[in-house]
Image: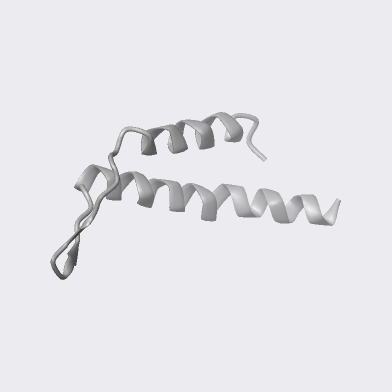
Amino acid sequence: MASDLHDRLQRQFDRFKLFPEAGRQGDFFLVRGDAFIAFLDARKLIEDEVLPALHGLERD
């Protein structure tokens, strides 16, 4: 596990604090583009680094 994983994950979640909640307008749910990119970045970090690190802890 990378020693800076906690810090990178914290920075990623701090990005979410910058975005107001999106809302539903009519039949659409609007999300700002930069908020969506932050979500995708977080998802990639979780899939590629957080989950494997957690699975590694189960084996120890």
